[in-house]
Amino acid sequence: MKKKPTSGDTPVAPATKPDEKLQKVLARAGLGSRREMERWIEEGRVTIDGKAAKLGDRVDERTRITVDGRPLEPAPAVQTRCILYHKPAGEVCSRKDPEGRRTVFERLPKLKSGRWISIGRLDFNTSGLLLFTTDGDLANALMHPSSNIEREYMVRVMGKVEMEMLHRMVEGVMLEDGMARFTDITDAGGEGINHWFYVVIMEGRNREVRRLWESQGLTVSRLKRVRYGEVFIPSRVKQGQWTEMEPAEIKSLYRMANLPMKEVRRSTLKEREVMERQFGKRQGRGVAKKGSSRRHKAP
Image (cartoon, rainbow, N blue to C red; front, side, top):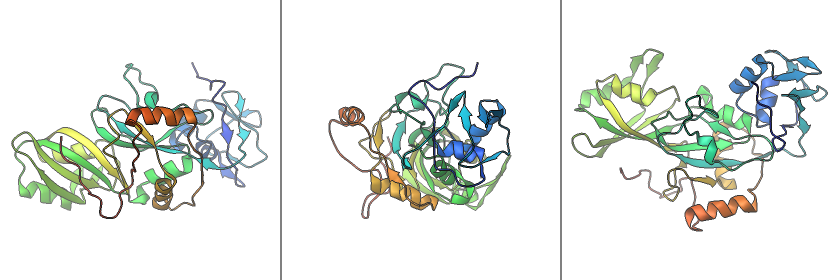
């Protein structure tokens, strides 16, 4: 059964450029990623000018768009919000899970309009940094393969790691979905089954970090993302906690995406109170600054 937005989730349309793809307009409204909006269109959840929309449709400011029977309302201003979340292992990145597992969206602050869009994903057994935004254009640009944004992970590997294996993974390994490689591997110490490495990858393919190690006959027993581009996971943000990103941090995301900065919508007083309770009223930053440490200590 199709789920309709609740009374507090009325979709808000962004300013629409002439003759623009429908899924792009919906994504920029904060309803989800472009790929997700394409699924909604295929499922018949979207109409334009009273008729069922189809993939390939283009719209402009005069087009009447509805989602699940609710019209998109004109937005008074183009604003964005971005938050950083420390995902624990054991959560899924989808909005709903047929197996009833906890999703990353359950802990996030509720929005009066639009929805949180995840910038990339982490698999069920991977922990660490996840970014969310209400700006579909920003999310799409940061996830696009052409963005060439570094993702850094802390990895615990089981098995005997030899130097030749590390060289092969840096030079490139052919996986079932194409060539893959780490741009950097750093030994973080440890012995036996508790040996840690830092690895940097430029793509976000499914289980790519794990599959690269598995190609060498090794097993990843722990995996945590610690950096996405210029954004590091702050030590004060523990697993299951989120923090509102500061305007300077959001500006860095738009710079990485090569998009113009949008007006930042601040969190509500209630949300700030929740955030303060999480951290014991401590303040901090998520973007690395000059002289700050690039590495995290292995657990």
